[in-house]
Image (cartoon, rainbow, N blue to C red; front, side):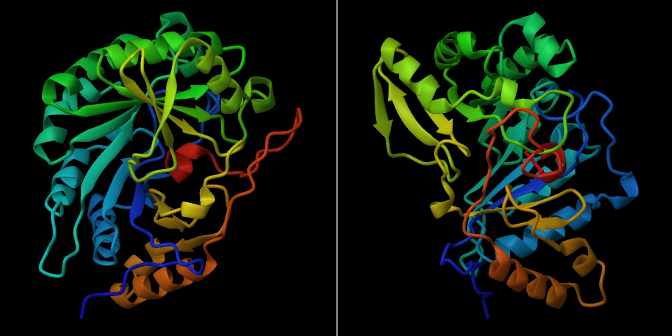
Length: 338
């Protein structure tokens, strides 16, 4: 018998898995992690084979979109072995299950090396995190002078035939004045853009309130410059899109703080240690690593999925409303999976 699809207690079908393959990253973005980040011991991280087995179970239960994340996924050794294995699940099997899309989110620093291999494995679309085109500002934000490598990676992605979406975190007093130029540049390169509100995850060395920029403010400013028309298309995630007549491109907004998008949530996240988080903004989790390493992995994973669907919360409660406030969630985004 074909296993039942994953459906939570609010009748939301779970069709989208964000799978973190590592918490490690070669950048240290100020809004994401401290400079001296303590990464997970390697022994705690799932092997590539275990990551594949987790993915296989989700695909069998109706997941059709799988995004590989980190940290920075392309710093994981032999990462392409996992991409190639998952690529073989694109298309329906005899039970009508399979991936419609395999994709990943990357900071782009190693994209030049892997773009052709990603395309060959079945990846057609990627997200690249890029908050600024100013080299000094990039180095300050990322604590690494890596903008040239990112731009080289973007060029390689285009040459490999990968569709690129630029993800930019909107930061008050840092890149807010540059956002129109970043959007225009990206659209000129044929890339979509999505703007993201800073999320209150994990302790960092700065106060996020100082740089919190509501995207409704950004949108009003952009509407003074360009003609924005709502676009009903979806890429399976939380972004809401508009078309910009003057640039000919598409712009998305991800608004966890000013525009909650939980009613249509179709996503779960699995960390590199095999912890299944039902909500990015919640602490609830189910241990898939223990299930995988048990004497009855299939049965234990089925039980874990049942618990997760019963515990998935209706919505998150993100807020950034005062200076010095503790983060809404203690773990870092790089630990959960971006």
